[in-house]
Image (cartoon, rainbow, N blue to C red; front, side, top):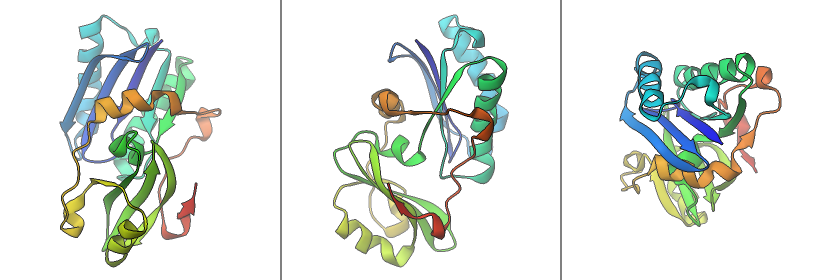
Length: 198
């Protein structure tokens, strides 16, 4: 099974090639607002490193959000093209899962701007709550949901744990959700009204 993982949802460009769950090649680099410039150049380079062509891929996994409006669409458009034109299976993970991996209990916060954060509580890689919170409610949220902090802890003057995106995706491959209708795939743009229990 040859798998490609793409993440352009936030500030990084993440490209990982897996074969039967083992990492064959990867790239994680800061590329905020430059993902579209680098994605295909770096993907071609990594495929060349392992001797694969796009048609060799069995599946593509992307993060479907939350994240930057433009950033989310870069990887999603690529996945849709592969899914519809090359008949490659498409799967998704949330951006929160990318940051937290399979930690027993984790909280992820990311800057939603305007004094708000995208927030989630996850247990062993599965979100139990996702939503948007005002900054002044984050500390209460963290008290009510004990766990390791990931993401942008600077938003609340706390140190967040570093995220190993490559290892996190490797561990999460079995729980990535298959997209049944690739044409209907849309980014997870979160709004206050979207907060929910999973």
